[in-house]
Image (cartoon, rainbow, N blue to C red; front, side, top):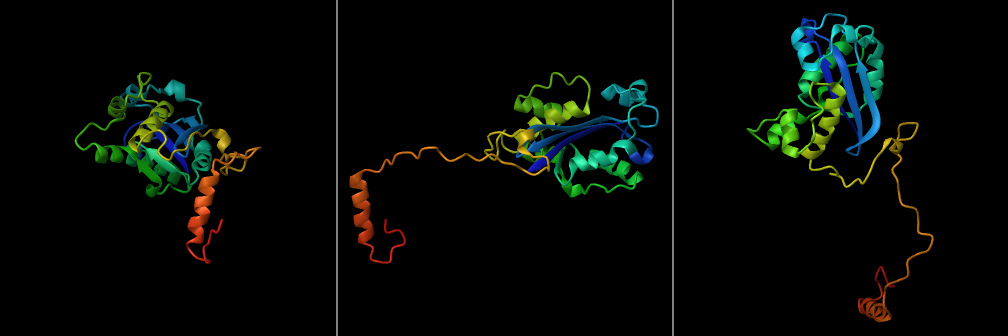
Length: 228
């Protein structure tokens, strides 16, 4: 099962008013475990950065000048995401911006049902409690001390930990490990399976237990499925 934990930073709140994405950070999960496969791009928004937005993420005009435009990374982003579920905190916001940018380029848009909204999950699990990313870090004891400003990749890393707690712990499906080696060059899963033992284990069945079983089966008649 492949999921992408994703966050964006923008110049404001409304793409239809001219706001743009300036950073995308995304982390791949395989069976709920982060791999080393990430997508991270700073993006030239082709407009000035409002002061209010700069104070949130610290990405200014000088830093973003010369970075790729969304038109240069849009298809690469779609290729990275594929059909994986997108784990996003306040998904409506990020999906709105991503689909606006994709629409302007004539690229396929992301279906809203492809997103898993951790804000919605948190509000349903803890009704009436604060559900911001920082509040959830405090609830689950997750260290977010490096988060002095919003940053898409750092927030995705933190959100991955929060998401695993929200769905029931770090190994909800009892997968013991995953890494980028869990997918081969074609992108298909290559799940590890144990090899056969070089020497079979010695039987622990006692002769008296074997004789008792044989007597029990014999008493069932001649049409038993497991006579031995």
